Length: 264
Length: 222
Image (cartoon, rainbow over all chains, first blue to last red; front, side, top):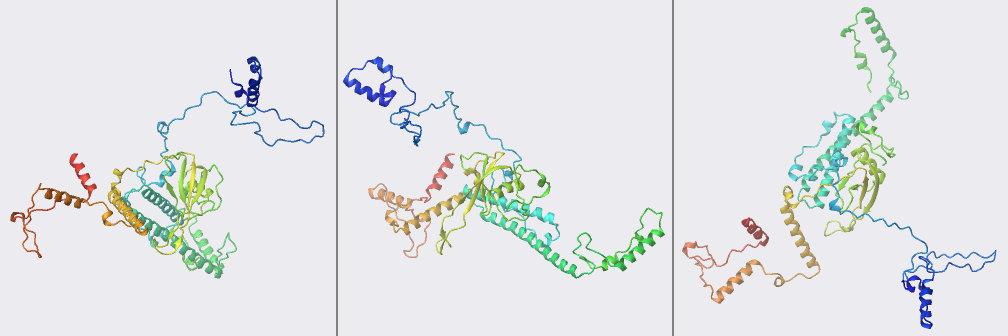
């Protein structure tokens, strides 16, 4: 039989006093109604008249006691299903990494990450500006992104080499990085040159009477005398050989007039 | 910076999130992919990013440049330790902080295991390790010196060659061995006399490098 103190601390105290005075019958103890998980009486409302002030008890945990193991004042939902046991980290199945995972691009080597300095030193020179001048914007843009990814790879390898204390190789990495940076500087150099050339061309075009920059659809309007000459040339050629389907190179109007025209 | 310009046909891919609208064609940023901490789950990838980067930048960068989808990004800034401008002298300054971001990946990524010491020969690990040890020793001595507690030579442990001399001395004094002095042609301008003419080695040959000797014996055993 549970001791009275376990049932309810206040009740236990009463029982002890009872026991000291008179020997309490055991039946009476068993007859005490056991209210699960609650030790204190419901909070009484002090005044019961209709207009009484509502006195809320702000303490939500009144009556709960850790010392007396009273528990909460309401039932908690607890399942008796056995909990799953955690699997140790070592026994977990290995995680399959996608072969095409984009993050592999951060590594030179999928096993060592950082290249050995002898391998790292095997690189060519940077692109020169004169080589880059011949390239289109698309090519330059692609090359820039190749450089960006190479620098990311280098930075990752350097971090790994330093943090894991792999050994020497910093000088080789920095010389490689310098080559990449020189290439990137060359790309910016070429693009700046092209921008200045474009600016100069716009200035020239503003002075040119044949070019109207305010008309984006047809900015180039050739002079009338040139048009007439071309028209007559075309007319004569079409009259001369109206039936031939094959184009005779001699009939093609000369590009002299175009060459004379001011160029953008 | 909101997004980074895409190259090629990859630009047509549909991102599962709203990509930034601002186009940046020639960025200078360097992103470092960092080895995760030992218990970090494989869906988290750590990066060192420029200070001006924000979470959306990294998300868009990984999507556009590396084709890596990310569901979330966490970021934090590491303050650097203050230092003197030129190492030992100069004014006190604090280097620029370091920003790190942890991306939550859709596809998990596991780093390869770190290289063992045997596999680091290509990086000249032996010399590197010796250099590190020497530097640590130097730092230790400098620390003692700055504290004014540099040990006296008598307080330092006895060298191996001195130990050998002491052993030899004890043997001679106890009469276990007898002293046979070597012949010397002249006292001041002395030359080494060949062994046939009666030169006797007084001291034993002792290797000063205990670690190297231990390794040599190990190899012999093998």
